[in-house]
Each structure stands twice: as structure tokens, then as C-alpha cells.
Length: 201
Image 1 (tube, rainbow, N blue to C red):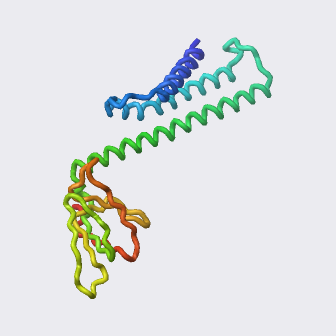
Image 2: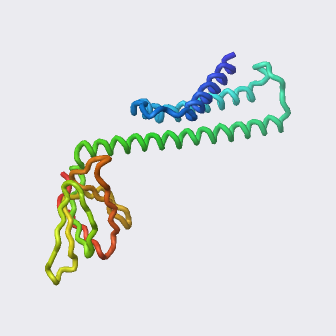
Image 3: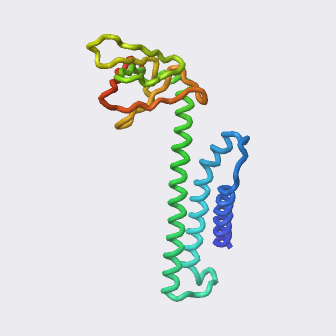
């Protein structure tokens, strides 16, 4: 009886997760609800698959004790391999889903915290450029260098260095607001020089 109950619970959890995945939540759904679903659904999927795998293993190992009809060895081995492969695949999907949901949740929380702190823990930089870059936004200052011997003709200040890739700088105006201001992506090449004006404490 408890083997059947374990299998039923596993099936119910897995079906519930699958059903919720195909339900489109309204835009008015609170962020707390969507965040909780993103965190707990993959955990539920892993739990459901684990219960199914456990009950399947018990059915194969203790067929006589459970009063099930015996199977030939080849059929039993094939069924075990197929079922275990399916369970492992579903469990792997659940693990990847859980990791992705956790990373998304932490990334969103970090971004919100950085915005609430006005990005003050990011370095303030000055950008020197041969050509005009058009970096404009609240808090930014654009200057033109008229000295004939100076290679760089434009200088920009009042920006935060948000991130750097091997060939790009990602910059924000120091008074940046979400949905209002732009994020600037500047190429890292010989026409650009980046000076760190202030490092975070």
C-alpha cells in the first residue's frame, strides 16, 4: 500500500508542476508569488521524480513481496534502464531549473539593492575618447579638449562602471533611474581611455 501511495504522491507532484508550468500567470501577479513559484517548482519536480524513482525501484526489487507477477530478466532490466534514464533526465532538468531560478532571484535582488544604493559601491570613471560618444544622462558631464597636442578630444564624467567584458565597458549615468535612462556600452579599443576617478569603499 505504501509503495502505491509513494508512487501516487510522486505522480501528483510531477503532474502539478507540469500543470503550473503551462499556466500563464496574469501580469498583476505579485512578484513574491512568481519568485516563490520559480524557487519551489523545480524543488517539487525533483521531489516528485525522486518518489517515482524510489517506488519504481521497490516494485522491481520486491515484486514477490508486493504480490506482483514475475518478469523475465531481460524485460525487467530494460524497464529499469528506461525508467531510470527518464527519472535521471527529469531530475537533471529540475536541478538546472533550480539553479537558474536561484541565479535569477539573486541577480534581481542584487540589481535592486544596487539601484536603491544609487550604485555608489561601483567605481566612478572618466572616459576619454577621440570621437564624440554621445554619453548623456542625469549626472553626466561632457567636456571638449581643445589642446592641439592632446590625442583625446572628448571627456565624459559622472558615470559608474557597472561591468566590464573582454571588449566592452558597461556604464551608467550617476543619477540613473530604471525605465527612464539608458545603459551605455562602450567598446574597449585604441580610441577610448578609461580612468577610474573613484573606487568604492
